[in-house]
Image (cartoon, rainbow, N blue to C red; front, side, top):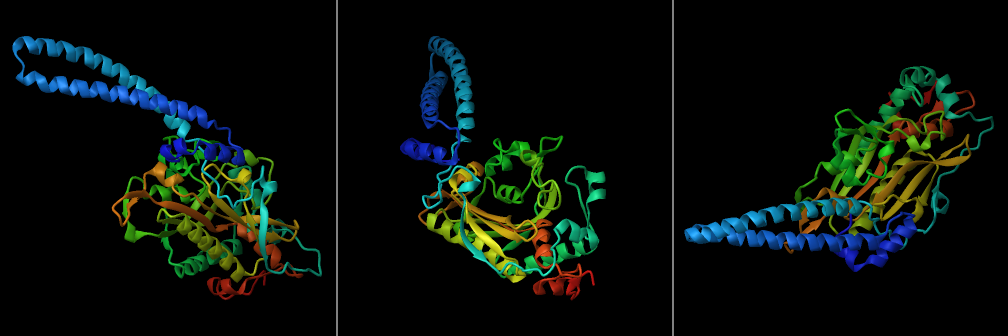
Length: 421
């Protein structure tokens, strides 16, 4: 959510943001509604002030004056109730429309219609060259007893899977190594609740637009697809001390996604599943664009450096305006090389939002000048499992059907060098 004062003063920026993000939003309609809101609010407050003034006169009035004042109070009370109802109706429409105002993308972000407009800005690592016909992760992991898709489908249904044996051990190795890695980066580990109230999703910008991809429980709570949501909700309606900033958290959690809009995509394997685990970086920092940019680079680089230690080739992609969500200012994706497909697949997304989320969630801090400000928020996937196993096993597969384990993971998996030996 943006500041209404900023919107009033910069309607052309909002219009331009809507065009670049391909969001159907009419800023002129919002401004008309805002004028009506202010008009109704002014009338309501005038009547309430008049009611208070009359009320103050009653104790010292004569019997005759008191009767007239009480009669006037009755009329004012009825009128005030009517105006309050009118204001509430307008406020409801205004608040709903404010939720659809797009954030202003960074001028440096590439302008494009959809994912085809994303720009590769960096690549790292040497792609493996096999002297045998490489297999995909489904065949590799199934043959090594690392996954069972048939029984997963039997129990869960579409996109179901069981990780088994060394599939599980490898995930634990990645989690434990990641915990040690991000500990050196100053991130505080947090295991948050993943069943949350609507307010946190609304605050992060996941609803109302993306509600179709979210599991809803019977008690009107939600099972969410990223720990970004509860980690942001953790500080909802709080005033932080400036000395606390930046707050750097590493969330570890199960994640749940319906993939409602991706029913025909990646129906086999571990690329797109309904439930998985993820380590997520989340940062709350001072209300400074330069601070947000610096922190954005830091968290994105953290994930790059982590992947480098694993030795998996990757590319970094600058996300275009048409492929950004409503609240993002700038975003980069990191995509890992998948040999059998001959393409890169997303493993991490790093984004910053300025105060778009924190204004919705009312997360503030008192600046050194005593002024209250909304903090800035950022997040970046540290590493998701089991998706990373796709690239890991395909890039490190051997001619004899085994999989070589990256050296940095071996201390976390009993010193093993290969899966399958």
